Length: 596
Image (cartoon, rainbow, N blue to C red; front, side, top):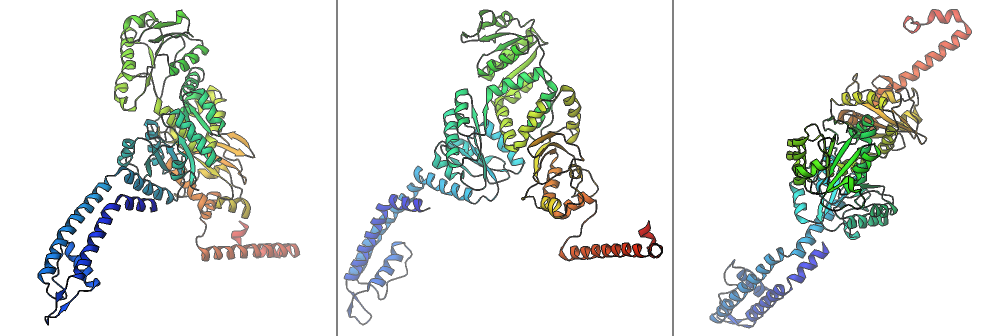
């Protein structure tokens, strides 16, 4: 704010000096010009009354002549002062309005407001650099999950869109270059509540600069970066980026898994999707002859996957491709029937359209379907707002660039255990995945489940109580299927992964005993997540899911229950002592209900 104040003083220096000069001359002249008092004697008005009179006269308020009526000389001077003051104030007010339109001042005020909002954040938040299509999808999901975020976007028109977005929180946003470390500091990268930074701008060099800045300012901060070039991705990884997302490599790996492990890939796709989205069944790509229209890095990634799966491929692209054999390549745009027929579209089992322009992809898709209606089609959608056109064409698989990157970001952000769970799932068989898929569908009534982690450490108050203070009965994973908020109900959740002493177990048994330091990754609906959060914060709720009995709440009732329990233990000890001395008499004195 100090910078804004001094900036305004510099911009208004001339009007302020002019007003001071006008007031000074007017006051001095009024003091020097003699007047006449009520007795007809000459007098000179003092500086205080002169300044008082000029102040309300120059602003056109007017309270009359003080302390006595003015002479003609005084009134003539006041008349001149009025016109001087009006001119000075007009100049000053015009300068103030011009200052309000000053771009430098507007940026300074916006930066100060942004800095204040970030400083006041009291909840964990992510710093998102870039507000393109990927960030829009990601921010919507984070907002639905009640996760705060801060946005830096270089283009001001995109920043204005954030104000119109229907977020539940007042999102701090700023139009600036995130590659500048000073902007990162203002955006809160050093804030204690900042839990991660996402470099997902459309500029690879900017993403690399953000990765470097994050490594220097917060070396241990979670860093997720987007890249298209492998050399840039390797450079990002060398600067400590926890997750580097290469769009084309991700697409290639995903398509390869679809061909080789369709059921396992389906499980991974559901877990990586946005929570709450409907689970959509996607057919597996067939093996045979494929035609690829558009051989950029996207098409090249899928091309390698098809070859590894034993498919034959013909590529159509308007640019020459020296790395492809002449028999496998046709130089054309691929939207006309002649080039598609030359590529063998009539005998093909699949078609991939992956141009950089959606219009070319849709045109090639329409032409190919007229020739071969039985084609398995995979379409690359570049712009999110073209979803209506692609939904009308209904390709078997639609690969949306923004969604792929957003899914990968969400997977890295949600939980470190999720990546470990995914790696274990990919090692499972197709039969295992086929048995687990119906359970996933039933878990949230056909919707993508939420994913959360429960850590049994010193920050978990209930865990300290259950494992250290009162370890009986032992806490098990199965206890977390009991609904502590609605007594008697069962939660719709499943323990996906259990980590104990660095060893991960996929889908642990409900009888698995939990120990201090363990971590469990759960999947389920939103109510189950809220119930688990409540259990971690309330010892009484944890005791209820362990014992099935409601524990007394409040200090007085807990003390009463403790006193009763100690009395029962004392009576039990006395009976045991009596039984040792006289077993027959002890049995006769035992109450019937206790014998039962």
